[in-house]
Amino acid sequence: MINALFAARPERWDTYEPTLRAAFEAEGLAVDLRQDFAPEEVDYIIYAPNSDLQDFRPYTRCKAVLNLWAGVEKITTNETLTQPLCRMVDPGLTQSMIEWVTGHVLRYHLDIDRSLALQNSWSPYIPPLAEERPITILGLGALGQACATALTQLGFPVSGWSRTAKSVAGVTCHHGPEGLNAALAEAQIVILLLPDTPHTQNILNSQSLARLPKGARIINPGRGPLIDDEALLAALETGQIAHATLDVFRIEPLPEDHPYWAHPKVTVTPHIAAETRPITASRVIAENIRLGEAGEDFVHLVDRNRGY
Image (cartoon, rainbow, N blue to C red):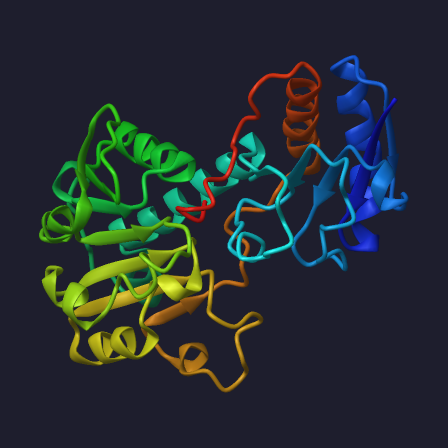
């Protein structure tokens, strides 16, 4: 029998317990799934970083910590965590991110806000075709690549940037510090899908925002610290940036007195771009437990040195 500890907020148990059990059964795994075990009895920890479990030292038998969230920045710095850590790459989450990003890209591309504002007047606006609207995605991990591919299928010319070299069919890929300028130079819409690491914080700052074409739009469903908030507000005031749609923030919920709430050129959404879906996420968890029991490599293993 495999002992799996569910270490997330108690209210999540009723949601995940049936889907996890179904996924374990589908993989042919005999798993004792509980919310409480003696630490020395635990083989795997199914984990959410906002749970009460923050000290991993007693879990001496634990083979892996399997994160329920895509983001791991809240756990990678935990010095008590010595077990392998796997991040969540959930097909359901990926699909929801594709849909959210595509929706907001099309809102900008078609200038839907203008159409709504002028719906009682006959003032036609003919948008350019997608092929005339260059888009750049900062971050070419699983989510970035999926969104890039979806947008290329709609006809947008898509460039991508990552810290290390990547290759994505139909996407012009840049990497490293020297590639960032090229990725931003012609981008009318910039989408941020980078992890939060010391290397990516404030990647959109006064200098990088100035490299964009005047009137560019920003979409951030990635991580709040990717943007220097003061620099973005200043760029919005000058018109260098025409509008920003922000789903993530340095402090969440976004404080009531934050200038983003009332800014006419900012759309705030409450961290809804992509949510882990219990059914598909449970299958990812079950797959990793199967791999661990077979002595095979875990999927989506976190590189602690890179932070993701």
